[in-house]
Structures are given as structure tokens and as C-alpha cells.
Image 1: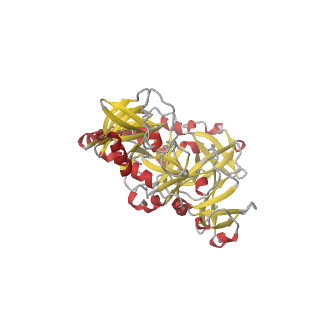
Image 2: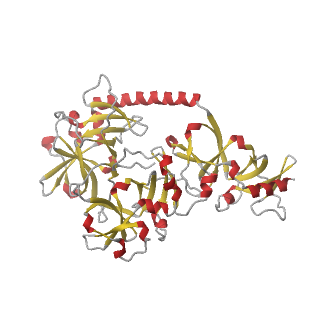
Image 3: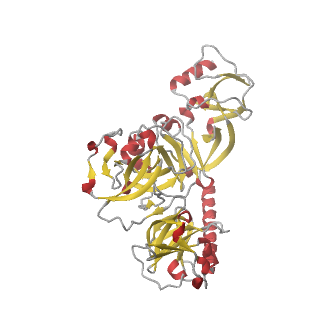
Length: 516
């Protein structure tokens, strides 16, 4: 899964009294979402296709242990589909639960006064007026920015997502911040993206790709005994243990009282050999995302090449040299014994959590699933519903005047078994027969039917608590694939079939008649 960067900060150029909007492009047109509706912005992740749904649904993604439906905003707005590019992004919006909307390119966060937002009827637009909050006249002379309403955009294709959102309850309400992984539409190849922050009234920065998230300082921090004062303790951040380090203390600066501007930068120490390679660094405040050219970055002066010289990678000279920003090298933090000790404590804590979870798994009611594949997607069906798994014979016997959904018949130890292609059942493109294909003999209300799948991979034993409701994306999908297993540690999403729904009542009567 692609790492997103949460950034609960405001650009100094945007006043608090202004309405803030995240602007983005679809083709050459510019649009915006209210910033309050955007939880984060991420790169396009790996996704699992969901059959029996609208073409606007790109699939399901795994976002930090939660199943995220991802929709193509182009499809919702009835615009021509295009291939994804490196600039494509997913805006994760809050419609009661989290939903991802893919756009061509994200631009920037802007502040707009109420009086500068015009009625949507004032311009000609191909977009349904019900999806628009209003329009903004851009200050660069390049036309209007249309403000879209995320909830209405989702409802137009998937009303059930919004209707059932309050029941799903998988939205992390503490994530009130927004991704700052924003690219200027005029950005050049020699620009570096830096996250700048303050420590003791001095400005520092990390490269954007090193920063995974920016979050508020929690109230609950687990203290670690017998460590340096730099180590504030351990926190549990989205089901992972994170060591917390004070940059003030690490850099030998005076301590200060906690305040509302303090933030935790979750930084990836790329050269770490530890199981967990992320550390939370407490800073006085996050300022902005800088776009800095290489010519504005200089080497560290020799005068500073004394103790801990490896901490600083470059010095940025901005605003004609009046503003100096020290770019820190994340991996250099590993030279500090206190950081190494914090990682050791993290490993011990994670091991204890693993043992605790394993104990819970063994003591819980379990479910066994037969896992099979159609194309590259994994599906599961309760082993109790599967009578047996058999190879496909060289030739399926075609029986005249049978229902169109029945591919043929096989003789299974003296019993005539109707066979249905699972790809056909899911409106997927048929494929040529292979040696890996199998027939799942499924019992539906005491009636046996064979279903052809591309391959059978395993019988998986799961805790029933690992099986959750799938996002409701269409009536057929919700009825037939209403459950899902999210194995986030293995980056796997397995959609669970309801055997009873594989055939409707009329089809069951037809199959029963074929077996008589």
C-alpha cells in the first residue's frame, strides 16, 4: 500500500477567515473540494476489482487496515476515461465513511472568501448543477474553478455508500488533517518538495518522500523506563507501535511546555535495519510544503561540520537569503543511541502485541474459507458450502434446451452435475481453459452445482472477527459479495461469496430440474 502524508497545517498565506479548498485537474478543467471534506491525498494504490458494480468503481484498496472503495471521478462526471499517469491521485473524502476519488492531478490548497464564490448557474458547465457548490474566479486569469460536493458526487453512483455510512463506522475521526502531497501544476523537474517545520524558532525540513504522516500529539503516550530524555515514549498509531522522539531534546535545545501547534512527523528512516523503520519526531509546528529549486540549495558550511554534521544534508537559501532552512537527513538519526534504544523498545512492544493477537486468534471462533481466483482477484467461500473441488473434464457435455447460464454437464460419480462459469456469473470476460481451472461443487439449498474458477489457491482459517461488511457498491454486489476479509499485513483483500446468492430462486429450480 502506498504511504499517504497527513498534514494538519495551514499555509501562512491562507488566512483562517478564508474558506479552504483543495484544487485539482481533470483534463484541462480545474475543480475543487472543500478542504474540510478531504481526509488525505494518496497515490493510486493497488486495488481489487469488484464485479457486478458500476464502471466508475476502480476497485477496493487497503488503506492502513481499512477497506477503501475507489471511484473514478471522470466516470462520475461522465467524462471520457483516460489512462492513469504518475500525476494521478486519490482524494480520500469523508462522506460518513472514507471513499477515494481519482483525479488527474492535484494542484494546491487555496483560500477563498465567501463573497468571491459565485453561484454555479453563472457559468456554462457540462457538470450536473446538483454536484456543484459554486465557482471561483481564479486569480491567474485562467478561468473558473468549479467547486464539487464530494457527498453528492458519490451519491450519484453509489447511494448505498452514503446511506449506510453511519453504520460502517470505519472513519478515523481523529484524522482531521489533509495530505500535503501537493504538486504545483507548473512544477519543474529540478524542484524538490520539502516539508518545513520549526524547532526552537529555527526552520528545518525533510524531503517530502521521507515524511509519511503528520499528526497531533496524543494524550496517551506510553513511557519507556531507563532511556534518554529525548525518548518521550511509545504510541499506537493505526495499529503499529511508533517510538516518539523530541527533536528539541535530541538537538540539545531547551525544553518547552506542550502547546497546540506541536506536531508529530512520522519519518521513514530508509536505511534502518529494524523491523519498524519509522519514528515519530515531535516538532514545535509544521509550516508548509516548500518547492525549492536545486540552485537554492547549498552545501553545509565547513564551519558547521563539527559535531553531528551528518544531520544536515543541505541549506536552503530562500527570500534572497533572508530565510535559511536546514534540510535534515533522516537516516542520520540512527547514530543516536537513544533512537536505537527506542527502536529496541518498539520491537519488544510489537512482539508482545503479536503474541497477544495470536492468543486471541486461537481462542476465537474460526471460519474456514476456500480461496480461489478469477483473473488476479481473490475470492472466498465458506468451506461448509463446498462439497468438493474437482478438475474440469476435457469436454463438458452440452445439453440442448438448457438454460443459457449453464455451460454444460459433468458426470460426477454417477450424478449429473450442471456447471456454471463463475466469470459469466460475475459479468467478466470468458477465458480459455487451462490446467489450473477447477470446479467448485457448491451446495445451495441441498442442490449441487459446479462453478468453474480460474484456480483454487488455499483453504484459509480465519477468526470470524476478521470478516467484515464490504462497502455496499451495488445491489448485486452487496447481495452476492457482502463480506470481505482484509489481510492488511499481507496486502490482501478477499471478497467473500454468499453461496446462497450464486443462483436466484428461478435458477435453482432450473438446476434442480436438470438433475432429475
